[in-house]
Length: 276
Image (cartoon, rainbow, N blue to C red; front, side, top):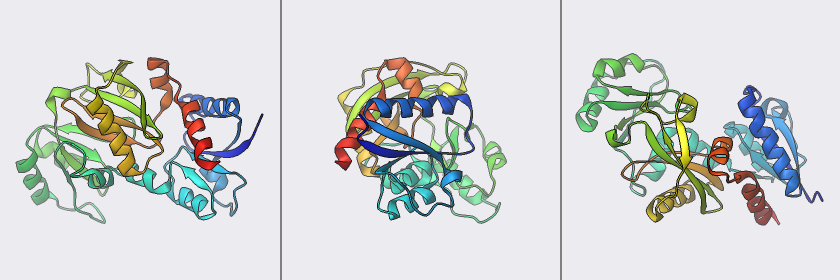
């Protein structure tokens, strides 16, 4: 029996089968939980001024739209603020700095166009050493993340786009742990490995296996989500207990196939508890 009407918000321009499979799974899982989930894209909603739903499951990074939905009195899962903090790697680092163990990180100064950052790069290399991890502030699935072995390689990556420079944790080359958190609880985890890349992402050729996180790893994941204000999220942890990244709308199909834990119904049960 349908008892709640929700809105699934996704990006209009991500139309590959990978994303379509995820969206269908969320809609089917919602129905099993007694939720009618109407699927709309950010383009379809861009000119709307009202939203006929009791909540929004916001599976996108269009935080302007998420905030508009919230301003209309509808709760968004995750919130626009939490999505914004996770989407921008510099903001993630700043929010967690001093509270969660992370690799040494230096956000680049703001520039409005491609500028001479040679002094900044040289100083950052003195502090962080080489090789160094270059991350554009915006990007998913390991995209726009590079391992630079020299100052010249760093300079070749520079553009007008914001970025951070980060200490390279060599012991975690090509491997990490992804822990999924829902409602303040770690619900499942997988260990990812990539023999051919320093990034562990499955999209880049990595593999995964089910993993039982330590109490400390669970604590890191849960606390990071709490600080960032996430209702649910995927937390990546490197060897040594260093938090790498936090994902506000992680692609949950891979971890479901790996661990046999379906996160979608857990999300919907949490939402029902929150809005009742």
